[in-house]
Length: 222
Image 1 (spheres, rainbow, N blue to C red):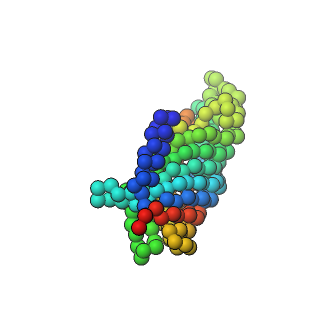
Image 2 (spheres, helix red, strand yellow):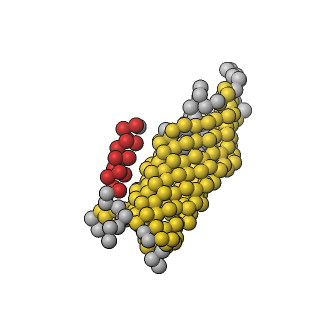
Image 3 (cartoon, rainbow, N blue to C red):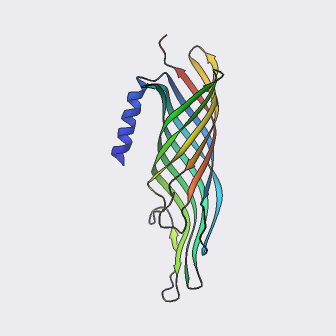
């Protein structure tokens, strides 16, 4: 995983040489874990959580006939999960409060400029888990082999997937404040396509909303 992160960072650093705009971005996020439960003997409940995000982006990178956008993001997000599977013959339960830190690399191949100042970007987000903080428990109970709950403390039990990916979209409005400098209020939305957790009773995914502000430097020499 470290090799992948280092390779992505090298690619991003190289892209700065060819990009036209460099952006620093900070935001608050609202995260909602969810699943598409259609199992008869499965129960899942979720509570949303808040977090924050910091990112650096390079924009308008010329690639053949397209203009790409790359982003490196540090994400903090949280939420509560309760999943249960089984019936009278036995059950498995996971109940946890989760806080995650991840490093993401995002590529935006679809980029649109509207009315000069409005920007819309759509791309893919690839996220690598840095750490997780857990509280709660896991329990498996069967008549032939009952067991006590196993406490989750973030050290003895690993719950989160080390790698997740999804679709990321962005809408921003660039406001010029000085020669070659802009501020950019913006909204971003992440829709996860991969499972956030391992060894639990549901295929839990994440949706995250971001509301933040970017500071943009025009790198054009003209």
